[in-house]
Image (cartoon, rainbow, N blue to C red; front, side, top):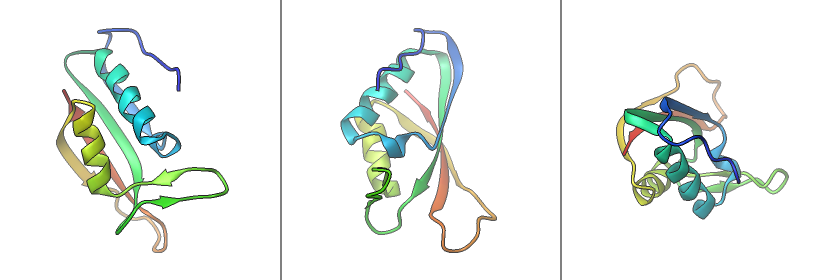
Amino acid sequence: MDFTPAAKRYNLIWVQWVLLYLTDDDLVEFLQRCQAALLPNGLICLKENIATKRSVTDQQDSSITRTDKRLKKLFTKAGLNVIKQDTQRGFPKGLFKVKMYALRP
């Protein structure tokens, strides 16, 4: 992934259903590039599917649905802290849980 936002420009970067298409290393590098684009006190907000017991790889689209624990390890590796998190409500049963995270360096 080559996307690099402009440095020190954004108060908020919203990332929704993107991380599942990145390898762990690419995910960390992407979040580090986003972090460099934040103004002081800026936030990165993420919304992603969450696997319950272990990560799940979809062979058709090559996506990976990670566990909450695995995502948080990758956030830490990227130099980010979870300052708020919540679970999406109202989704039909049988779908992955969806969580939102607010991250700050």
